[in-house]
Length: 266
Image 1 (tube, one colour):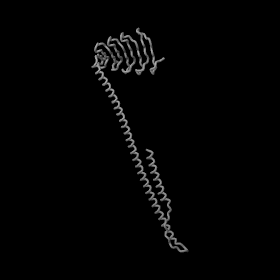
Image 2 (cartoon, helix red, strand yellow):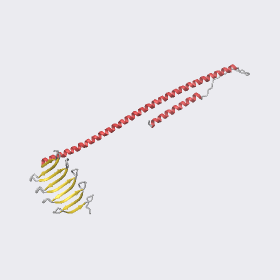
Image 3 (spheres, one colour):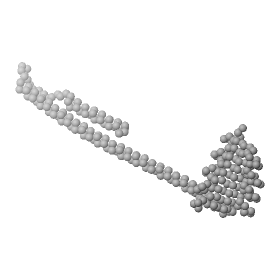
Image 4 (tube, rainbow, N blue to C red):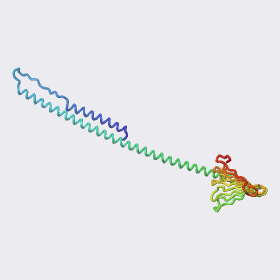
């Protein structure tokens, strides 16, 4: 039961108790002044019969007054009991309404939670749809690119996932680029770039598992295809970790290390 409701009940009980006490006091403690009939008595002696009659009448008056007081007390008790019953009915009614209100509040909370769940599901589906749309856009662009270039496409065992793409120079028909994809996914593993004049490799780029972020670059001499430089990248794919430079014999001639902020280590 709420504190405000308890205060209302307490005030009603207090008023009933005060009224009951006032009625009881009026019934039992109010002074009774019985009326006595004045009789003419001689100065020498009073008539005994008159005194007895007066006493009997006074007693009857007292008994009548007592009966009236008892009747009034009974009525007061009945009225108090009736008011108590009415108060109890009000109390029960308030309790029922409080329970009904609590049920409505719980129902609202349940519906709010259900609505939030639906909203979260819609947001998730919207994100999934956006991702799917982006993938479709990328595939559309890839298809356009494939149509405009001299390409050779090989697929993985499922017949759908690309294994590698080889690009050729339109004028010389020599290989100029080779893109290899990771197993079972359309994500780039590495890319070879070639000199269109002689077909020698000029660059090899490895990518991280996301297929977008660079892992390392190998650079080759365009004339003879010998390795001349290797650049290793940090996890962001942009900040250099270290660089190896090579002699014509293939041995490392110089290594330069870099700090996490991109500055050269001394």
